[in-house]
Image (cartoon, rainbow, N blue to C red; front, top):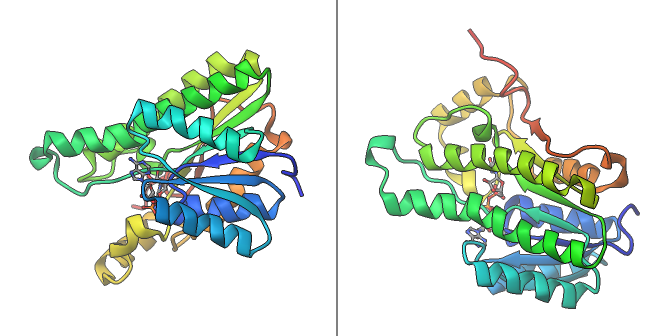
Length: 253
Ligand SMILES: NC(=O)c1ccc[n+]([C@@H]2O[C@H](COP(=O)([O-])OP(=O)(O)OC[C@H]3O[C@@H](n4cnc5c(N)ncnc54)[C@H](O)[C@@H]3O)[C@@H](O)[C@H]2O)c1
């Protein structure tokens, strides 16, 4: 049990990677604040954690809103007693050609993926520093934070931004004993990618794009988070770790 007496706040916890992370951290003894845009889905994840013997609270948040992000951190501290780890898993993605991308959609994707990560991280880092505590922040980047992917201009820009923000926070918070790292998954089977898997042409191209010949399950991403949040990763900060079946290692010819 690596995370007894550890409070973990997870955004985007109503589904996908954030939900899997909530269950994985709770299984290792953490108290989890599962935060989601819809309160019902946050509470559903918290109930699933409790049903498997863990401790959790479900909280509502809109990570694009500064007041909401600040209030989330206050409520997480009140609900958990102690807050030590933040997982920024809230995210959205468009599939629209660059030339047709509406400004409103650009702003929504950047606002959720990049500004949301900034707002939640700043609120948690300020809390940790005020409490003279060390901590870990783990951001969800993507392979789309390392290379371009067609028809995802806002998503790719936001995730490259997350990689940069992770470096910056890693540097500025290192002497405060707060380590900040990002994870860059290839395709993971979640609500975000649900439309991919019943389309044989997309399935074939996904298998080609990932040299491992498959996509990932959310639990595989959660296991990397457990490592990054543990004291085994105390000397890692500002890094982005691909977990992508070889997606960014090279191109097939
Ligand atoms: N699924 C993949 O293939 C994949 C690959 C690489 C990176 N990621 C990243 O992993 C993270 C989790 O995605 P997922 O695959 O679990 O998808 P998902 O759609 O299941 O989860 C994303 C969650 O973010 C929530 N969210 C959206 N806007 C929000 C807001 N304003 N405030 C609070 N919550 C909000 C959604 O409600 C949803 O529950 C995202 O950042 C995504 O970009 C996913």
